[in-house]
Image (cartoon, rainbow over all chains, first blue to last red):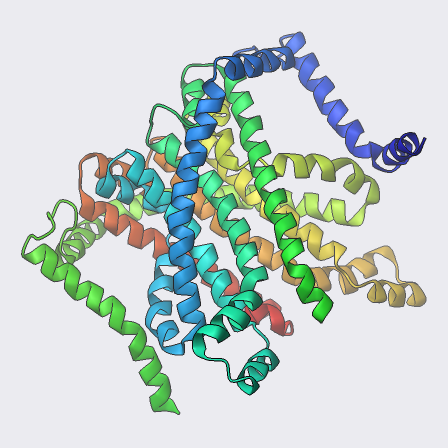
Length: 261
Length: 257
């Protein structure tokens, strides 16, 4: 009973979006059905569905997605670890900030994609170049958010720590880092999202056997728009999932902060 | 006080200086092959050659024209959509879900389709850049209008402002900081995407110079390219920042960022 009423209220309040999606879908189906645009340029909905089933069944999609995710995990791990360490150092010590801030500020000005040719010259076109490219992309968001998070730790907490005579390590472990956690998590979310699109950029620029970007660009080269469409959908879904997942984490980890204020 | 400030500034130069000396020594004594890490002197010479032959200027001009066109199209249509969704409920209800849906897909994923539809010439690059510039601009304009404080709107209702006056005196001024943020985000996105587009599809442009240099293993040219695009990106952002302070001097918090 309540489910039906829920559905009913959902439809009553949100039907507009559904109407637009339905309209888009109808236009898409009609255009491809009457071949207003040839199937070479715009695959029909059934063709995309068929391609979806095909790449899943043949295992192509799984392997590609898997290798991209492994690359992300490696690059993300290196980038966030370094970013976190530098962020903590610069947040805690003014000397470290003065030492490193100008350098990182200068490096940060390079549009990330601009690193690709340089990295290819230095590391070739295999795994190391992709991973270092992703690490660079993941590094900066974490660095900035950790730094800002630590700087935003309230002074009164530090005074309490002084009263209790915490030593440096205890101060860092008990006050500074936990206080910076919400910022750090939002940095992780940002750099995770960046990593996901950078892996696609890296794979498009340096072809390899497997990867979602490779699947995408080889589908584009081979005039298989249906598979390219599947890739776009998958890339969009993963980006959405990453954002949602880390968004929830961020909200959960920040609740204590809100309730304290 | 002044001496302290100077000292702080000088501390920041230590690491770049150390890196520079290390780089110079490593490349001078060929501890790192100069094909991978050309000495700083070579870099300056390369830059000078590229500069005086006009190669650099010509390619930068092409890239900047593309960014200009893409940014103009993308940001202005983003502004229109953002404004429409912010001001009219029906537009918001029908278009916002669709916009949010397509926004999830990183623009890079559209490359094969855009190449298929538009070829590898100018059209592809400009449309690609516009798509990238469109998204942050729409978001920030929409946010800015949606976040006009309700109390302002209540005051307006009391004074019985007309439609136009409401827009001019209340909505635009309070949404402007967010709109400026949108402009800056979409310009830096456009600058990044022009490099990306030129890496993927040939044609003149600074990104293409870097791709060709990379194939010929001219590390010096690639490095000059990296430095030039970093400085240009920084300068463009600064320019918008200056405009922002000029128009929004009253809005302190925004400037502090």
